Image 1 (spheres, rainbow, N blue to C red):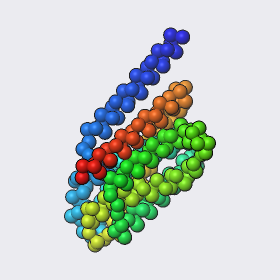
Image 2 (cartoon, helix red, strand yellow):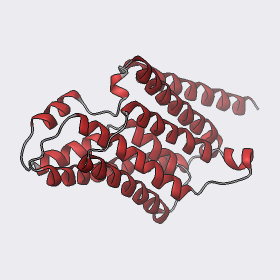
Image 3 (tube, helix red, strand yellow):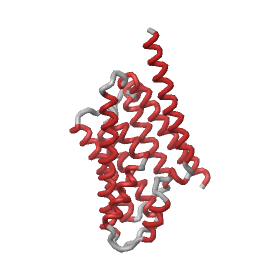
Image 4 (spheres, rainbow, N blue to C red):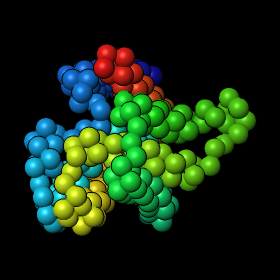
Length: 240
């Protein structure tokens, strides 16, 4: 009895610390940093580049995905209860198709939207996936959204958010298409690297008896992080 109580107490303290650290890290960033994260140095490089620069843009794409907390949070939610590699591959491919399509389409056509609104929707995608993992839609409305369709649709928004930011950087038309293709290849490489790291951690966690006990807390934290992202975007929209 005492051991069980101590274990629950330790779990509560652990998740509380994780939550506080996550919120603190988010609050340390400026509002501008939440408008689809592209580092200032990378922004300058994109603006000054001209001609085909395949490998540098592959690197920029991989870096964007590996450091893209919004993408990683969503992918973490997507694979949380997926155990078979076949299923993981299907969902990640759907997300990649959506992300790639709107990123290329947005930049090549020059069609953009307010970055804060797009990123707020991306934050909501994290909230949606956490609620889906918690079974909230089935419990509240008696329906289960098609998770494959939702993953594809939110992939569209994730890609469009990046396209909007790239358009703002006024990337040079010389070498535009090869550079965008290279960037997109980098995004997929970065996604595989990030996904591999997440799966390794999840694999160890799933083998412990605490996984199912802490699944609710983990997805609650995921949902809270999504709401924090939405809040920052709305603040940014209000003050610009």
